[in-house]
Image (cartoon, rainbow, N blue to C red; front, side, top):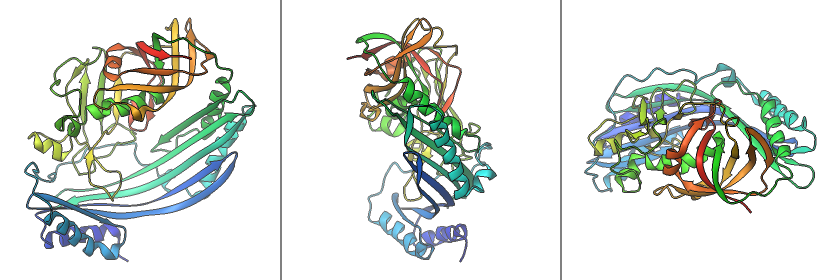
Length: 440
């Protein structure tokens, strides 16, 4: 059987032959291994092969799409993509697929050790997480997951774009619970392009967090210093700011930042960069998922809003260049505007030691309910603790935090030194000088 990349190149020719004015093929092939944990045992381990082709066809200014994971149906899929475009109305704002440019040079996205990892090794890594969790008395695992993947993708279009790149990824997570009442839970995870994860520590840290969260006390409703650990801050950013700096939302009137480019929207010490070239970044690649070279885009610099994020379509609507933010969820979807690696920068210090009175929040629940236009949010704070005189003291039994992301950006007065990659958001702990907490 022919290699699927050879078939993808044939699909480009077939799509043009079927009548497409422009054509794009996104093809991926690879394998993944996943292991699930239930309680303290391995529940399921499996290996999967991933392979498929997505076809985007443009005819008379209209866009059609189809996909297939069956190499023998690529010709049919090519015709279907053109047929889909043929029955759609022309989009007067369509300006064309990306043109050929030199891709960015990136590193830290492929590890041959992961590519060679099999089910047995993944089970061993999973058992290390379980051992880490069981090393803490009075705590047991409830669930967990580990996945290891290696894939290569090909992006080609009728404008001469041809990008072929390979990536690896390992992801591990663990949830634990205390054995005795009052019950408390804790979770931890890590992900990386390289096999540099401490699996034992994931289980141990989740267990320590659960144990430390027992016997929580009540706290009063008030405005105070709030330290958001990376997981908490990343969740809030993803559900608020990420939507507001998305050019598609801006163009459709769904952003509070419309018309504010060049304006101060955050404390002057804060900068936020979207960097598709970040070494080892989760969303790092030589190009975006349309073939536009990856780049470093200053979104906010010294508190000033400089740029939104664009894919080729939204950039064309404004007669500007794409920022390399065309992303896909899989070969079965068309590109859309999304984050690459959103990096938070601000002068750092020991934010806990320099907080006399406040709270620290490990994670939040309900960030998806935030208003993506106004930036308002109200979330449940999980694994939260009182800070007194620079020390983390009592766990908090129940607490909500609420606010507005644009007020949060104005009130950030420091960040910690330990930076984490929470998916494609790269951030340390962040201290907010004034935020509403809602106690019992």
